[in-house]
Length: 240
Image (cartoon, rainbow, N blue to C red; front, side, top):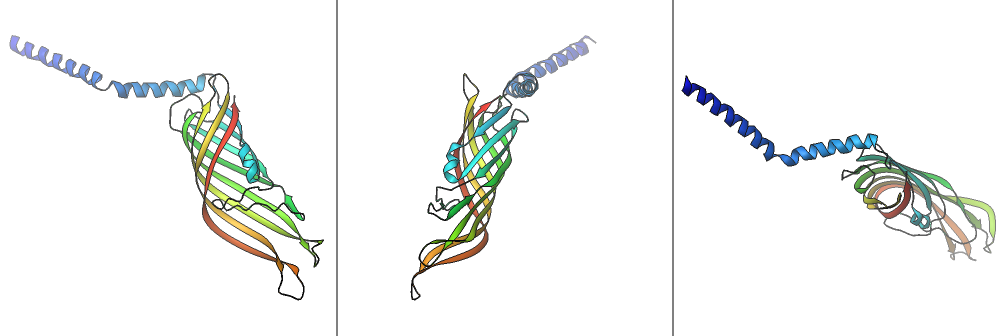
């Protein structure tokens, strides 16, 4: 009887020792779970930055003036949407399919609405929308201009031809967003590829010298295709 009691005590002591060792063997995993739970709970209760208004001043040279709004949904996931207007394009970027607009007389830029929307996932646990991230975005751009036709002597006539470029992008972007240490101002650096579906109505003007006297001629071509575009930029903004 005494021997059986000793065996029982020894078994209970061994089981208790194994339980304690198992608890110490995985301290990191327990801490990670508790830390993530604390961050998720604090996101709903702590007064922190969850909204951001941003602008991208460099896009002005590409003929686009957008304003962005980002809303944090969780401590890692946010929604970013933007709306803007397209104007004169100053850059000829072959890798994005853009052509610079003519500055000559007879070219009238028609402002068009642009928009984009997408989801952003932050790779770090933080109460505020900052750190390294990946983002998938849909964007729509339209550049439109009217080109007045020229007469035999080069004078502008009342006849116009419309040049229209429409781009629909699915963009996969990676970047880093950082809030100021003593203020809510921030910067956002990003870059990445995009799948671009484009429909172009392109007007080409040239001087025809094959006839008895020189005269201006115009070619209008329509193309629809898909290509890959690349983006790199910087946004500045304010969080609240």
